[in-house]
Image (cartoon, rainbow, N blue to C red; front, side, top):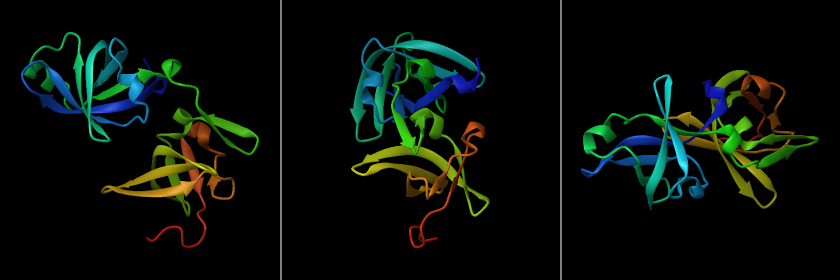
Length: 176
């Protein structure tokens, strides 16, 4: 299966306890994706394996514990450390954001490389919904993030088909 058919919703960061619970970093804003009896897929290198969720416990805003059917001990859980937890795009909600006459699914935008002044700048890692519209969360590494309103004057989507957005923030928006 092709990576383009999936959306990452979490990353396995380790094991918790002796019964096979996974410690995860949640990258999705939709916690309902981790409801009991739903399915998720773990990407291990170039292979994908589907699991049924037995239990999910949120621990803070982005951390959680996930128990999956078939992972029953700490050693088994540790084999998945560093792996992405994904869902198929066809299972994702159809939330769209609009820019002029064009509209895009969130998954079309999240993960795009971002260019600023013609140079690689970062990656879109999230979208925040604000009263006046959506805001792109752009991670540049080292834990640093920038936010750019998703408006035509600041975001060029011409190369979105290639996974690239070009930003033109107003003067003073970035302190870099």
